[in-house]
Amino acid sequence: MRALSKLLGRTTSERATNARDAADSVPRGAGQTDDHARDALAKQIVQESSRRDALRLGAALGGGAIAALLADRMTFPARAGPGDGIGGTTLSDTDIDAKRIAGVRIASEFADAKHAGTRTDAWPGAAIQAALADVPSPGGAVFVPAGEWSVSAPLRLNRNDVTLFGTGPASSLFVPSTNSFIDNESGMIEISGAYKGLTIEKLSLDGVSVAVTDTCRGIIIQGGSEVLVRDCVLKNWLGVLSQRGRGLTVVHNPATEAPPHKGVRVEACYFYNNQIGIVMHRTLYTIVDSYFESNVWDGMYMEGTARGVISGNLVTFSPRVGIFIIFTERNTIVGNRVEDCGSGIEVYEGRGTSIIGNHIERCSSAGIDIRPGPAPSNVGHCVISGNVIAYCSSVPGIQMLGGVTGCAVTDNVLRANRDGIAALGAVASHLSGNVCLENTRAGIYLSNSDHMRILANRAYSQPYGILAEGSTNWLMVKDNDLRGNTTAARSLVGANNLVADNWEA
Image (cartoon, rainbow, N blue to C red; front, side):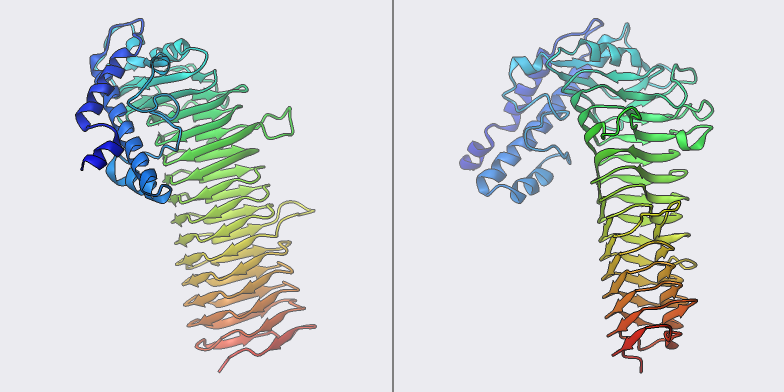
């Protein structure tokens, strides 16, 4: 036990004492001292200190995965990375130096009077902006205590290395019925300019009163790099012009062709009842471990992006598309769960998209939908592998439409859809190793699709194992196990087709 104590560095009481001392050292704002907020800040410091001690212990015992395991189980479920401090950038350990403490501000201490923190007696958003303005130029953090905050004008993060953080959903920022937002141009929190190292963490942003104003965004990012949005709730961002209502938006600057944003990361956030949860334009992005529920159009909408990563998210009840990728290149969509949407994942005029290991159920347009844009189309070269797609009862599990070329569709499980895989005018694609069962028409359906290789698939318990219609030529259909269907294969005799070594009896 003494060795463990030595590794951890300090006892719980020592951490609490040091944390309270650190919170007491935070510079006062222009308003009254908020002792309750300082107590809450001290609690955050203790939690961060405990997490860091767990990481140090894990490193001493072997580091890496052990450290992460200990941090998740010994402390609160934060997701800070090495080198982060409380709120992401500011407070390091219990050995917090005075220089860093000098960069912390408590928003409630910049209000002109104390408030109850309710919707009827809310803290003013202007106090948050005043605290942000008071952060020194080297950077710092603004702590937003628990309570309701009425934000009637955009909050602007306009310097490097600034963290805006709260306690979680209890730190609730909402839009009053009167506000100074500009239609389709602003949001509750704005990031613009060439700033870097900005973090928004543990806040709830509620656009509850803006549904009739066509104001639309919880967070808008118009510039900057190394932007992190973590453990936030973004809800009720709606608008008269529906596509403008977004929980979080990254906006492309049309004056430059280069991506204006680098390293935008969204982590462990909750998007609810927005017109669209997230919209990204020409951005290098990562979206992980977030929950998108009941957004009115799409869960995520990515336009003109490249090399983005969407991983480990849950998307439910988006009537148009769960994850929408349009005019993009080389994006990766891996390990997500998408349920009860229009299309689960749609790639429109995108190239080089990897769609791997996702679980998709009960979608009404398609599980995975690969579509061409206006002629001349350049869509294709997608990898669709290791996905489970089920119960899309009236539509295909995987659909590739006319002009889609050069896709690899491998090792997917497709159950109880209309067709497991449907190629409707697609060309030169490779379908292999898929398991198709209990679909209402065919395991694999082809129409007007040429130069397709259909190899070593297993299809059973449906009317057709493989069904080809229309002008479908230059097929290679080989080594498939088509036993257990009403009809193993139909209409595969076209021009220059090779059909061999399939198990049909």
